Image (tube, rainbow, N blue to C red):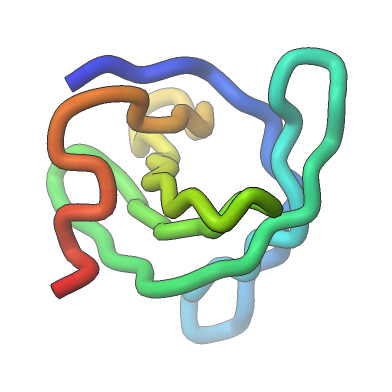
Length: 80
């Protein structure tokens, strides 16, 4: 699996869930739809949908709080 660092505009609710509004890819901010989210030892995972209807997985690392997008491997593996 590969990752690319991204910017994320989001908010956190009182119960700990995150609401992603948009992500920064390169120099551009892109509005996204949001799907399922979960946490594991690798961090907080959120499935998002880009404007071209592509589903991607983003992860916030617990040790750095940096957001990354999964760019290869099992992207969206929690869809089923």
